[in-house]
Amino acid sequence: MRKLIESTFVTLDGTISAPEQWGPPYWDSEHSAHAHKLLFGADALLLGRETYESFAQTWPAMDDEYGKRINGMPKYVASRTLQNSETTWNATILGGDVAAEVAELKQQPGQDILKFGTGVLDHTLLEHGLVDELHLWLFPVIAGSGQRILDGLVTTHLTLAETTTFSSGIVVAVYEPKSGAM
Image 1: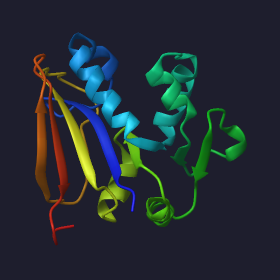
Image 2 (image 1 turned 135 degrees about the horizontal axis):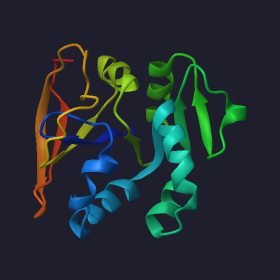
Image 3 (image 1 turned 180 degrees about the vertical axis):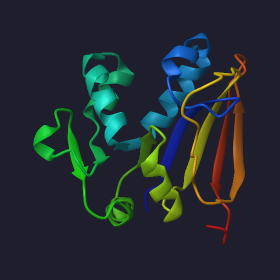
């Protein structure tokens, strides 16, 4: 069974919005190498509609090894409003019972499924026990405002599985569902 890995950038005050504003000072070779390893361990992306639409405007123009990998991967997009005919970036819309559709994707052969962009979809995924690993990239910055990570989610217990610390101060904490707690 494939693993579903949620990967998200977060500030010390829990902000996840606008990482392009607070993240760049920390995006160095260690960050890139870790992101590369995570991406190349997956063969599909799961995205919410907003993340998909944002990424589809930027990533198709990227021609480096990382960009080519993202551009070539199948993308599964959870959306109640987007139609397959509206996608322009190698995507399949998951518009029905998203939890059931993601559970089915996890049963298919292949590498991990990587999810970027934390939001409403994560509530569904976590509440149905579909996230196998939650990778929180904790940046040593306080944003002061913005969307906070997983606001409104029901209590969800996790176990710390691994940490990676970069010289820039970023700490990637990998959490897994706590047995019997989800």
